[in-house]
Length: 256
Image 1 (cartoon, rainbow, N blue to C red):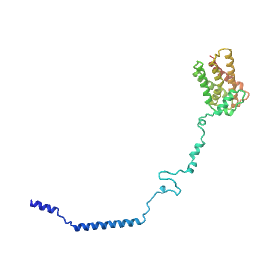
Image 2 (tube, rainbow, N blue to C red):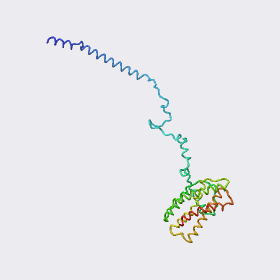
Image 3 (cartoon, one colour):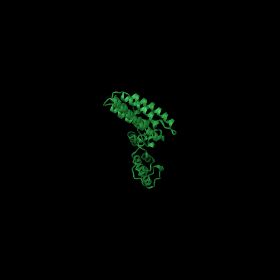
Image 4 (cartoon, rainbow, N blue to C red):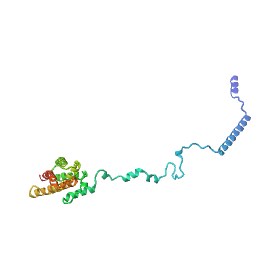
């Protein structure tokens, strides 16, 4: 037991005294004062400028805040994309749909005595022809006749035949789209005849006379437009004859 007590006293024995504690406190105060003085000297000295990229430097006229760039009206006014959007045509014109041309062509068909404008009739506008073909099939359907296939089939074959004949007769030639456009617009009087068939029967003298008048109306309008567009003066009767045969087929669908 004496040995254990001596070991404890030797283990816990140290040379630390109160004087040493006071001396260490003075040293810590000295180190603190030295740190504060160096800190004050560092604050008084100018700090070296750190490297800042030129992209991050703000211009003198910058009026915005950080992460909120100021709007520059001059940039948007001079942007080529804004000008290109303003100069773009409307969507209907890009699709080839011109309501003024449709109205002019329709009025030319409704008035056979009005001279046709060849520059307008040369355009391959199929909006009106498709609309008139659908209207003809719809009026026939309301009259109890499902003839959509015959209307589309005869229209396509008739356009091919008239296209071949006009290319043989004219020196300038004509496109298939132009032929389809003219024949489709001139189908409007036949739509009127099929509309009459919805209310009364055309299988009689009145129906026969009305059909002949409508066939002459359609063929006269189509031949007038073809003559004006292709500069085929003196050949209107030659052009009107195959057109009358084509519209006669539509008249037979309407009557029977």
